[in-house]
Length: 405
Image 1: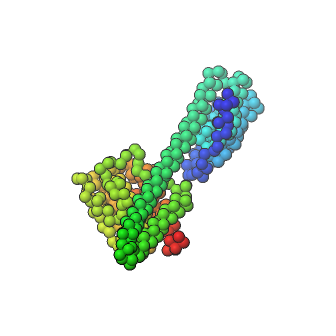
Image 2 (image 1 turned 30 degrees about the vertical axis):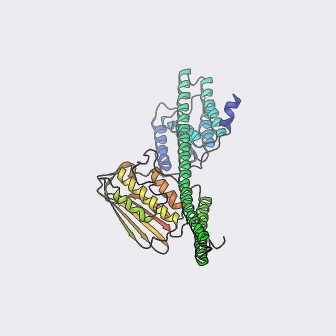
Image 3 (image 1 turned 120 degrees about the vertical axis):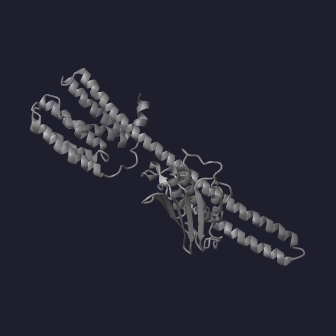
């Protein structure tokens, strides 16, 4: 039994809970007057003033039930136990005090394993005390235990569902970083192939045309410099990326259609966006407009622009109802690359709600890793818009990056 309880006892608290929100204060504003009114108006309630004061005072435990769940449970149920012993009857006995069920829920949602065990002992001890003193018959005591157990179970279920969601996000973060690593592999492989070809040409012409061999060495040096710059850039991105940032690739609930333009090229660039036009397949028409110099974009930035637009277009095709057109605009200047993708469809509830899907989280991760930003949301009248801004050099790159090789 000890071995079974040890993991529970050592269970850490989950991520720090959110601060008090407006509905916490709304509960207080509603419950305090209700407790006072019930205490004053119920003729069958003994010690009505005392009951009203206690019921109204314990409402304050709801304000710190997340940050200090064990203390809230100890105060809420401890006061009830003391009142039961002192007054010689079941206490508290106001209907409004059903709000105390929020405390076991919060304990198992936000507390550590040690706090959960101790808090459960306090709550069950209160019910057991009332039963031993004869204030609760066995049936009522059993019903009280069942109600408390239900509240605790619900809190634990929400707790572990939240943990599962966090694990899913961590997993998709890793997948997005694997994509960046694959882009690095493709880029370096391209440069090394060019170096190998030039080296073979230099060897073949060294005896008859030394100048050609020197030219080959210059090309090899330039290709090696570019490969090292891009390798250092992406490695630096992966090392310094904030693990708390959201991350995710395509939505696993909607796996990528093999006929979509994903991965048609080993290392896509901005110029490859025209593929999205040719692969509309009878869906909403895709119009692509590119403004500015995109020829010398670093490979990670160029690939990110393509991936962000690809994901935004794919989401529009899947989720935009009655959409007839998807507009893609990419603008590049000396400092940054800005992209905007919007459709004219009617956003479904999933897209217009506050919850972000896996695809949108993955887009944000890709942009954040490169030092940029990505945002998505419904338009004022209709349609859905995705915008992103990426630094032209990419995060972690610099003019002197290759000079240190």
